[in-house]
Image (cartoon, rainbow, N blue to C red; front, side, top):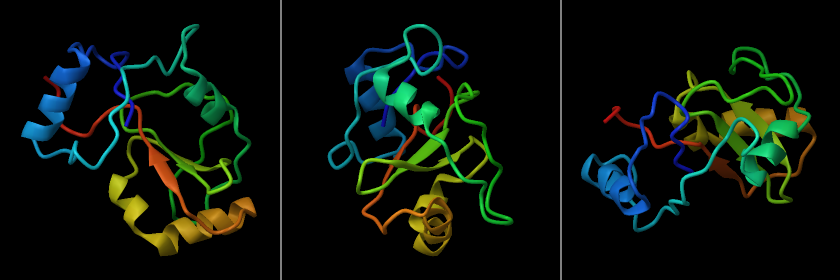
Amino acid sequence: MFPCNQFGGQEPGTHEEIKEFISKRGILDVESTTVFSKVEVNGSDTHDVFKFCRSAELPAPPAGQGQPQKVGDAILWNFTKFVIGGDGQVLARFGSKEAPSLMDKPELLGSWVSAAGAAAGPYMAMEPEPQGEAR
């Protein structure tokens, strides 16, 4: 998980404060989930991970499974999610309106992976900001 303060200033804290916030609210188990340092996901200081993810050419989503986002589109709000295949390629991108629980449904991810023509998992899902209320 990559915290980011570019969306309404919702992550003004230090790395430790962010981890404490996430842990106290039960958003993620910070012992089993990597919480990276705060990054920029848009603009001239965009972190290389998000430059890479935003530059991926992705197929249109299977019918009824999310809205496509154009290559290179800026991340518009918290909770944009990228699915990364075992080969390190970006397989799918989901906007903030797509529930993170989608990542727990291999049958749905499988259709995205098939549409991308990629080999099966393992997958890594990333989002630029933890779920939860604004501080």
